[in-house]
Image (cartoon, rainbow, N blue to C red; front, side):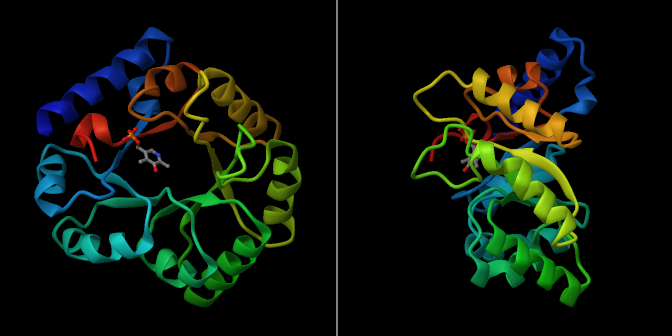
Length: 217
Ligand SMILES: *Cc1c(COP(=O)(O)O)cnc(C)c1O
């Protein structure tokens, strides 16, 4: 696991240098969904501090103990968030990457005001306009980002996308970068185990890598 982890770190650094970027501009979010503490701990001990989980409840089961042991860990929520889990998500996560609808923006704004804790927020864009996939449609993204900022008082730090599995991802990464640029957003969460090098070429500031580090699920 830690061997695979180091290889992924090297590949990220190489991909950044190959396109004239600094390796430090690209963060690795190690996606630990379905993996338990025995698999996660060696990766923490190898130096990784940023982890991604896709379910609030699963994350609540395994991260509080690890966080107590390693106070500088950062957790990203990368899976869909139901409004009835917003309280738990705001309490546990440092970054929520899956803000994608008005109802969720309202619930997040209320919980941030109530709790005084403000996770950094990314808007998920459904770049492939897939019916079964979460995310705001590309043509609705500008209006949604504006509403998040102006009506709900939320700071939008980044955008996130998951390209369709059966299409080359580059056009989706380029589209996400374009939407970010015209909305004055600097952070781009895009690229997974199979395509993080291309995502880095197209401007990813963080890549979400699971199976290349932890093996299959
Ligand atoms: C599981 C998951 C990943 C990681 O996928 P791998 O192909 O295992 O690297 C990245 N992003 C999201 C949103 C995921 O759910």
